[in-house]
Structure formats: C-alpha cells, structure tokens
Image (cartoon, rainbow, N blue to C red; front, side, top):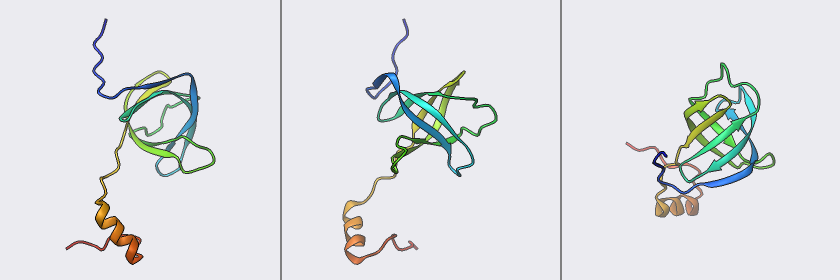
Length: 112
C-alpha cells in the first residue's frame, strides 16, 4: 500500500460536485465533477475531451450563479481525471487594506 504524502485533509464527494473548469482568458470551458478537494488542491473528473487544451493554469468554477472560482494549476492527468493545485492568493496586509478602504482607494498606490 502507498504512503499518503498529502499535507491537507481532503473532503470527498461520493457522486462528485458539479462544477466546471475554464481557461483564464475564457477561450474554453468544460463541465467537470470535483471528486475531492482540500485547502491546497483537488481531483477533478472532466466531462468531454481535454486534448489540445492549455491546462497549465485554469479556473475551477464552483458556482454557475456567482463568482465562486479558484485559480489553479494542473499537477497531473490520468485520462479524464486531473489533479490541480490551488494557487493561493497573496496575503493581504489587513491594516493597509483598511486604510485604503477608508480613503476610498480601489487599488494600492504604485510603489517606488
């Protein structure tokens, strides 16, 4: 039996959680089922062909009615099943973010 090298606990979906994957630029989209997910990655079964798709970086779209999506990069593929690593958002300096909101600034001023 193999050794589990995963650091994060996984949540498994017996019937798969309906979702989709999409290109960052929106040039393609495929329906998929999330088989399991953790804080760091997911295993996904894709509906349809993934041949000739750029799967380097992609979006995992978890909602059809809202902006629930995660940027990820492909870790492995085996037929119609792919493993992805979730790209973690950069940490936000909470104090600086509160100041920007209080001052009505949408984006931080350029540094340098």
